[in-house]
Image 1 (tube, one colour):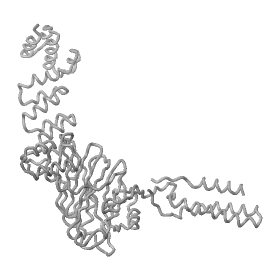
Image 2 (cartoon, helix red, strand yellow; image 1 turned 180 degrees about the vertical axis):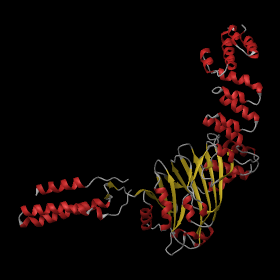
Image 3 (cartoon, one colour; image 1 turned 180 degrees about the horizontal axis):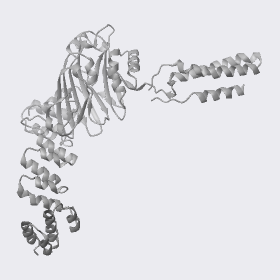
Image 4 (cartoon, helix red, strand yellow; image 1 turned 90 degrees about the vertical axis):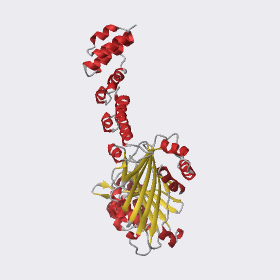
Length: 487
């Protein structure tokens, strides 16, 4: 019997590999047939804080429906790490507009991959049958059946092999918990069809028509699905007709600021979407779906609070800073950008990925009052990208000259020729030569004989060696050189 055990064990451990697992739409879950087009999202409000690596998305969605039924709220988010979800304070969604006011695994058993393992077991049984007495046969059968059951249990949590490849488990449940009125599950999936079937089994009635859109997210790396089930036990018919607010706070790590839009296209009717994004610089929606309404620096908003005599405005802004944990001093230079969409849900064909670039500056509205102007946007972009060509786009001559002079003259002497105020040109070149510690280094980097004159001027003044001034070709620079090098 010991030899039998050894033989079975070898087969078992040789043939069975160790296999490891590999704003969203409001989805209508109904006990009766109700088309998802009858779910309307009259409004969506999102407040996003982006620090360059981490995003905090506070999301509130108004939902209207004609019939009482369970509601499933699916929010796809890209993240390097598992997202964290908590309940958000509803008040911040009432307060944020004031800032822009004028002023683990689940897998079904796949038996098709299991049956080939029965062949070696059958052969082993025949060999054992020939060498054993009749009274041992019953014991052998019982033992082989036991091993077979063990194999089948193992296959419950394993994908079968097809065409020589190991199939990864198509769904991974990250977390299940209750947040406010929601029963929530956070999961990852590679197969939308499997995910929809699994969610339906868990009570989230999701139509098959959603599979193509969901599969697009499944095909992308590091996408998570936050699925919230709002039970009909917590809602009334009046709630559904008037619209219910569903605030959540989601922390995740995308490559760039993100807001889900496309999944909402499965629903019908008009909608209004407001996104308030706080980041180092103003941003635009790369998809073009959301349009910039206003953008202003946090310090400008904070200053307006002190200057305002409107108590309602003051209280709302201060309460928002407190509840949203946005420090108006620490984050004073952050930009607050309000983006908006007002159209039909079915037109939401792309998600919003936010970016700061020259198109962002072009998209900023020309409004009066506290704002981030296009000129200041281009200056910020020039500095952040170390690209002086963005200074060229600044309309105001003084601001454009300041961009050249203060931000690029030391590293790029060619900007000195772009100055509108020609009286600044010599000072611009002196700013360029000020960075060098030796004359030879300065002469090597100077782009022309005229600029080399400022090198001689600088070191003649430092060493009080007026003989260096003789090498200067420009008479005005030479005159100043003698002046500065005089003992």
